[in-house]
Length: 427
Image (cartoon, rainbow, N blue to C red; front, side, top):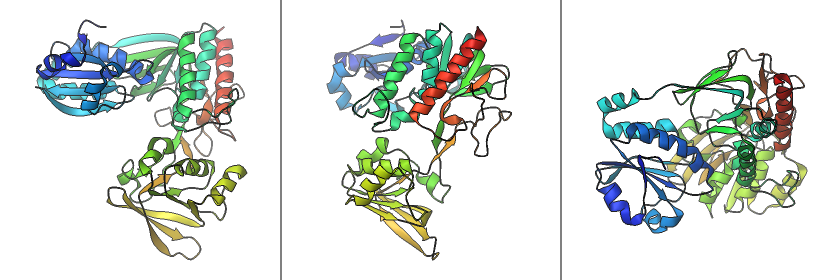
């Protein structure tokens, strides 16, 4: 433990936290990837703010009564205290360094914050390969490179695992007889990468990417230079662009069944979409919801036949074909409305529901990348057979690339090809 961080138990909480002027508390757990991602940031910030703010760590499993009393239900959870009163934001999951600093700055005041910021020194790190993105493609590439004794740093703005980590069950990944929880499959991949020597920068902010010069800047102070770069940033759920969608995103509208289905126990939900993700997630949500209405723009579903059969015969699920959403509305907690238009007649009507899930495909995560990269008509990165992009020394793998199918297995294959090709070039 760093000198300016104290590990305490429940009995010490009053004296070390509530009786201090300023305190920040990290409730952590063991075998917790988000906790591991936070640890280095927490220690580094304690060296900067530690003379002004008491930095505390509490092992959550060993102090359950205190955690329950404070309504701390996940690890890590970071709490801030000003003269014994909780203040600022509660930070959980993939905690960003900038979010911790924002709350610490508010506690110490603007002038003192400026002084402390001046203590932050730029850091330059060199590596052989820099991987952008920690989904299956990036993690696989990392494993192959590390096993070849090639120095590799993997950078991800979230926690390693990619979109797979939000999938409730994965039943078609080779090597597992029983369906695997998506989070655990991602966890196995990231732990394997760590065990082989991949260096991680997880839950960071990427400030600048310079592909031509093979360097990036993260968290405002660290510049990483590499000989080769592999882009494995994946894709994200495609928004509809319908009135009210941005307003109620995360507040009645969700894009993740694994994350939010549990909140709709015995409630009614509307699902927008008719492809694989919409239909498969509908079956998962049906474990919780009392009724599901699927709204689809076509006159038929586009999911795999087996999933279609299950949905069509499910007594909780109704499908409205040839309709599109035109507006989302919110009337109160768990009280939503979606205005849908009949594409044949043009008539509109409102469906009242408790929550809305949108599953209408994905878009590539390339907004921070060079506009010199060659992309296809849908914005996905084009590569050659060995996953090279049109920028020298820059490769791309996984769902961010142009290809006919996007599955975990195809992402893993892409990561393998990119890593072997990079390894040969470095030799």
